[in-house]
Length: 208
Ligand code: AMP
Image 1 (spheres, rainbow, N blue to C red):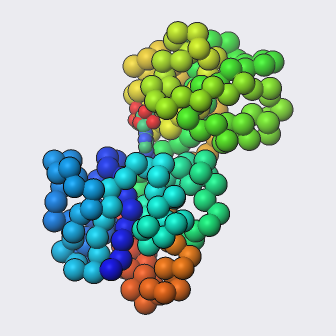
Image 2: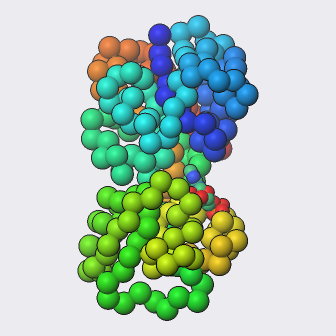
Image 3: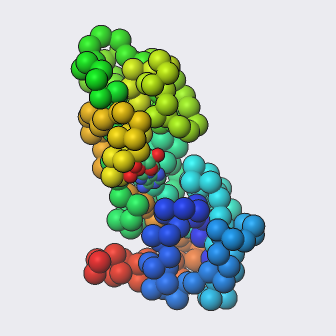
């Protein structure tokens, strides 16, 4: 049995057509079902539906053989204990700093609200900017509006969320896309089936 960890939402929606290419079609819809383990049209493949930030953990521990996770999540998690063989080029966006549209450029010490504490620390340190990082779990856009922070570090796709909250993108930290990750032991023990799946996904990604 091959277990693939994936999170609901954007990544799941964009991963479905790729998985279908390998004959993997879930028999339940995680948006309407409360099941956390989904069987698929392939008897030897199941999906586990978990939080995006938990995907590297499940794969590192071998609770899932494979996973699909954003590069942002992988970097923030520090996923060194797993293989990252394929950029699926889905759920593409940018990790950026953003501030109120009327806020002056940042000089001196800055307060930053984000769920990407490690990435933000590294980024501002590399810029030589003294930053106080405030960890949030969501609704980062609110922080500059209520005086909690000078700026945020968050994912930006269209920029609509920022605009709707009178914020604007400032500095690009990195481009993000979702990656296929593989447990190191599984890569050896289940090599044939994983290599086959990888090749199918790779072909599909290349033709898009
Ligand atoms: P947008 O309004 O299109 O710029 O999207 C920004 C919102 O969607 C923010 O709340 C982001 O955290 C979230 N977001 C954008 N892209 C992604 C992605 N690839 N994965 C997860 N969340 C995302």
